[in-house]
Amino acid sequence: MTDAELLRGPHVKELRKLAGEAIGRFGLIGDGDRILVGLSGGKDSFILLHLLHHFRTVAPIRFQIIAGTFDPGYPEFDAEGIAAYCRERDWEHHCVKLPMEQLLAERHLENAPCGLCSRLRRGKLYGLAGKLGCTKLALGQHLDDLVASFFMSVCRGQGIRTMAPLARPENPEHPVIIRPLALVPEKLLKETAECNDFPAAGICRYEKELDSGDRAYFRALTETIAARIPDFRSNFLNSLSRSLPDSLPLPGKKAPPAGK
Image (tube, rainbow, N blue to C red; front, side):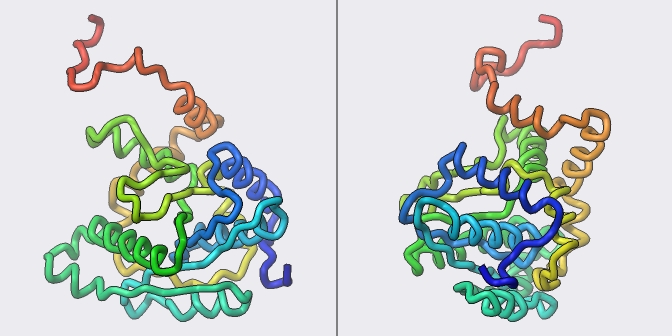
């Protein structure tokens, strides 16, 4: 690997270990895979791309990686900066674009933009994956995202679930979603990002809405719980893998009153 391709920081070995463990445990990558990596321009997606390129050079199997960026069309979003970063490392990169400001205004969703943006972004990446012959889409969600997603789902009455490290689509034309950072706590990613010169490119003009939404709230709650229970994140993973259906209310029935 060239010097530009190297990921720097004291946690790189641990990141490789945890990502490699997730790939092996959940069967995320197979021989001959062609993977589109969602490169949003945030620290998580840059680190994910670096890790996958490392594994591509050392793994006993052969697979291909292509970076894909969704450009929402905001002036402050530097899609060219992301593309230049990939060009400097000779990494294949493609960009898909939508005028999100216009689309949000047409639907009067400026105060709640995330839902529509998320759906359209995912749809454009699905389309790009199909165009490029990719059957897997790698996303940069990490362990803290999985915890927050679990709380959001439970508290909003959507079921006991979270983002799966490997999610097979209902539509066979869509790629399989993989999350190689599923076992990685966000703290390692933040500290690693500080040691690398990632471009400040993936800027969203709706940061205030993001900071006041459910996901930000539950991620802050995760920090509060972890301050009291240091092993909270690893305990969370263990609990998910040891769920006991017989101890949960039956589907379609309300839970009995407490104490009965």
